[in-house]
Length: 77
Image (tube, rainbow, N blue to C red; front, side, top):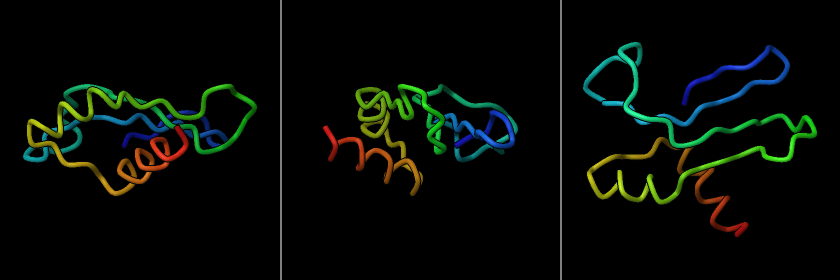
C-alpha cells in the first residue's frame, strides 16, 4: 500500500512489490486504489481482481489490508 493524496483526503495505491527489495526501490505494478474517506466521489475502491489472482498463482502474497479489502469487495458483489 502506498499513501498519497492530501492531508484530509488520503489515497492509497495498491501495489505489487518484490519482498526481497526495500519499498523505496519501486514497485512492479499497481493493481488498484482506495479512498478511505468518503468525499462524494463515485468510486472509492478499485481492485483488478483478475490480475491479483494471476499474481497469487505466481506466488504473490497479499497484505492484511489488501486481503480485507478484496474480501469486502467480493462479498459486496
